[in-house]
Length: 211
Image (tube, rainbow, N blue to C red; front, top):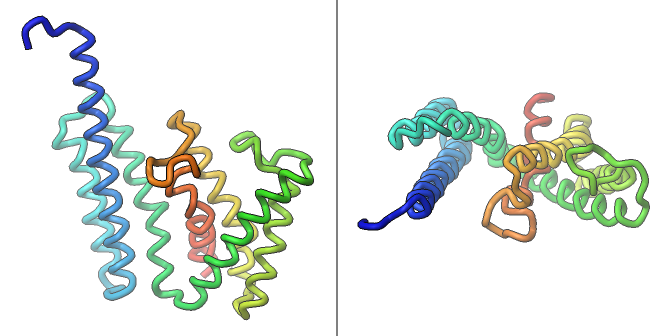
């Protein structure tokens, strides 16, 4: 365009990077969805689907020729695949997965309100608003839900009491590293869509480790 100056160039570059990031999020969403579907209907092919997803995520910055931020985008994409891939465990878990979801959700709500009301020491510098008092009250509430739903086991208890808060902190770590408030534009203002499931993903990861 005749007369286009540096401002036009920067806007064009910014638009290009925004578009590329959108492509990466779309590929990541498709890869995680593929893992969940494979776990539900063809468990023997989960690793193959995961490998295809990883290759697809690597292809995004390669095809775009993103020399400046390609490595960062590749790393965050693969981290997202590994972390969110824990959701694939939900399908094989059946009723235990539903109980875990209920327990973690209740624990999140109780932790938020109890922490605000009781105050006390901060849980972590990663999330200054979270308090130990809220985390402990939330864990107790989550364990009570497991007991009420007859889903109590030591791995499930550890998943709710430890994995849930850990997942929340991992999401806070990612957001602080990215310099954003919301993890995404889905449900923006409520922390982003990933903020609604971060505790559940953390709980599922712990459950996988403990078997």
